[in-house]
Image (cartoon, rainbow, N blue to C red; front, top):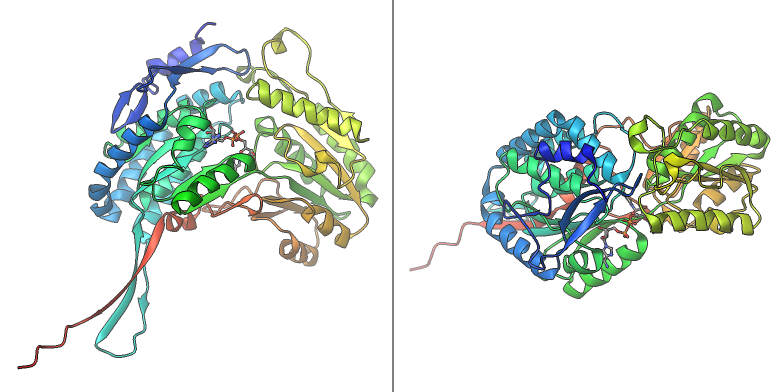
Length: 496
Ligand code: NAD
């Protein structure tokens, strides 16, 4: 294995300290002395190493966060927000390097300037808008009000598919509210979070406020919800891991939010503007190689436009170029061998259960693809709502088309899964749009757009098995606070 030159450039820019994690403002190895290789999924080249930590490293990080907490909590909220604004400025200034680093470890082509700085600025602006309320009282000599206070030391575990935005929004919201945090990034993509943590430190956010402990889920990850002095937890990842995080939190009665998977429907009616819908849906399922929780992976389409939609989707998906991330392609490889096996396995299941492959369905051939976890953009037609490819999250560039007869059936099929993350409706009818936005069981509903884009400060989170709690919006900062009710009156004078 060779270290890729691209990362050497980034390392030279000192965004990542090879083999180290951030605890108490210091770049330190794990006490285990072991490391994990971070691999470029396009060619399996070694990018860098990170510490393989466990519960003992998490304990050190918690202690550091506990030491940092009182001063961070007591810093006035405008000053806390100002430091987060400065962090956002540094992220913007280092946008190209961060984008390149995330591309290397995730395997995606460049997305241009990352959205993190804008998201973080919105969150920073919330820091001094965390407010309680004044309460009515039974008598005029009493004052009642609520305070919103941070929990103290909080913890988070995030996945690999969009490590930068996930890190910035989770950490940003938690610290804007006055908490200090211990976060474990995914073992496949820990470098962007470490780079962002370095920029937080450079911005002047004090040592110990943001701690990043790297390692595997079963060790470093599991130690976070199991830690009795971590007072609140945020988790983004798969429903299976979410369940075990919630069980661990239950033991300590630790509150949490969960951002889990999705099986998001794209509902197309016969009056939809297909010139807008088709490219958006094809882009939505191939962006990040379909490894986006919000990806619209089911097309629920009015039978009257079914044939046209299938033809046009196939044509759009065939235009998606696939290859190593640095070759100006539209779509890179999947993240790792396990994910490749999973996606190819679902393509086989779709075939076996009787769905028809319209395009894709294989692994692209040629020297460029030999070492990476590539798969073709794949479109299935003839899918019925009960098939596994219509029910289970594939987390790959695989789209299933399910024809329906009318609006009532469209709602039934769209809602007929365990998930409820995002749903889109494509129609020109305002009345139908209003009815559908009410009827769809999803945390986010887009009308004539695919990934809920274009809204500033939009809260993000799930219905049903997609989780609970909201990230990104103003609510995300409030989620990291607890409410204290105060009632106050002058003590009666002593009687003589
Ligand atoms: P995953 O659950 O396998 O891993 C996520 C994180 O949890 C990683 O950091 C991992 O190391 C850690 N982890 C694994 N086992 C653990 C354990 N027992 N205890 C504590 N931590 C543990 O998920 P993944 O495969 O990395 O990510 C893909 C999943 O994430 C998909 O289901 C996707 O939909 C979901 N996701 C959801 C959102 C959202 O906002 N709703 C966003 C991105 C990804």
